[in-house]
Amino acid sequence: MRRSLEEVSVVIHSAANVNFSDTFNNVMKINYEGTKKVVTLGKKMKNLESFVYISSVFAIADKLTIDEVIYPRLRKEEEVYSFIDIYGDDAKTKEKFLCGSPNPYTMSKLLCENYLQENRGSMKAIIVRPSIITPIIEEPLPGWSDSWVAAIGIFSDIARGLTKVTYGHRDVVLDMIPVDYVSNLTIIAAARANQSEDVSIYNSCSSSSNPITLKMGSDLFLEESLKFGNHEMKPQKLQLYLSPLVVKFMTFALQTVPSFFADFLLRLKGETPKHMKMQKRSVLLRDVLRKFTTTSFYIKSENSEKLIATLDEKDKVLFPSDPRTISWLKYMPVFCRGVQKHLLKSKQ
Image 1: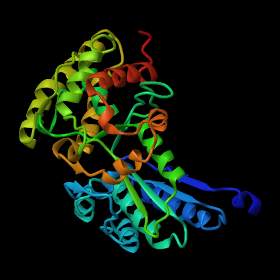
Image 2: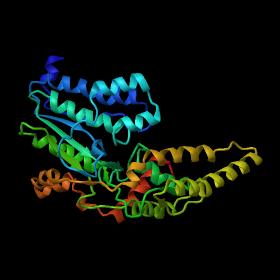
Image 3: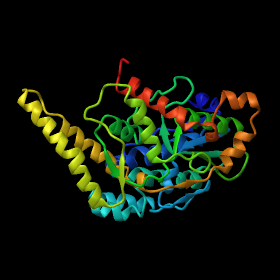
Image 4: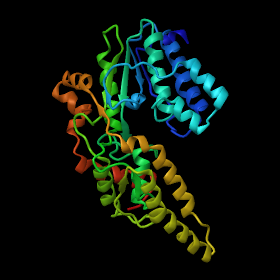
């Protein structure tokens, strides 16, 4: 075991519970306690050159502008565990306790960043912070994804006719970044190694250099999805409203009522109803993502741009990671086809 530890030169810690609706306790056990164990292990590696932690830009989602620095934790470790012991997952109490952080996942990520900074010892540490991760854009398999997380879930619900109304505004920027761009930036950061005594931060994002709005993204995804036939209900372009009252009324009119009658027809045919169940799930996802569909974050990425600029032209081609090179008009159809093929298992 000791010999194996001495042979390791790079650690990339990317494991995490990304279920935004999971219990506070589960999120802390996996994300925070898991990170503490990996940091402890890394400090035992005599020849370690880089310790890379994959965080999230939304660890700092209580701010509209997010820089490439470590921000102070919103709550201390002991406060979090005390809260879990007393209140568990009481929704109203939890919302106040999170101090503007959207969910336990984002709070746990900020706790991890602070823990790494304060307990890394002599390790050369790097933090890579992706925004909303989306399917592969180029290599090795365009459009591939194995998860329904965040944008993938909401876009596919729109395309399947499950979500027609959400919180937001047509000009709200949705900061997305393809997963291979995140992986490539991580490899570059690890290979270049951090020579500073401070923790180096690299935001992997698009809002500050090549933004796309939620409305544009959903419309492009829907346009491509109409070429496929697996719609649960008749899809339409996404309607966005900031008023909770309007969102609830329009949801009832455009989603709940049609789903109720669709299930009624299934019962008449002797088939198992399913539309109201799917509707409940899509509304839950929409509400969980409310912070991200109503807020335009401006995420800075100067450190990442400088790091990418150090590559020669050959490596820039081999390890694409610059969001300025993304054509959203070309990528969103790739995104959609990937979801159809790898998640919905469409044969077209």
